[in-house]
Image (cartoon, rainbow, N blue to C red; front, side, top):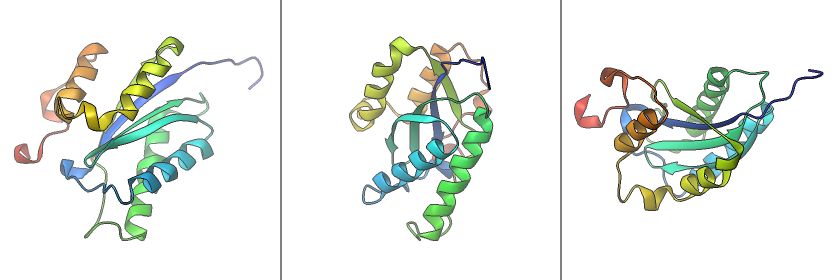
Length: 155
């Protein structure tokens, strides 16, 4: 696209179906590398991917030729197929419907990357649900409690 210039930084968050802790330490780095390749292959620039056994955080620079929802579809679909094809979990793996996408400025890049890289330490103090609601509130996003990633005991 001639004469089109953008600088779009997105922090993407999504959870394993029913918030079950299925992402294992033995293969999570391979999963993140696979996701990195999907994102790069779609024309975006990934900066950080990390998470916990029940959810993933991805921070990337977005190419405006694709919508966030289209990218999320490709990442979730391809990665769940990869997990299932490699038989990394018992039964069938899937991601929970929905996601959070939060935009940041260039000056915030290093802070967001550091936040994502330190997920394990961060979640010693705060649950995923608390974290996710905090993102929504800090971003000024109105939400309906019925559609928030629910803990397993609330399903």
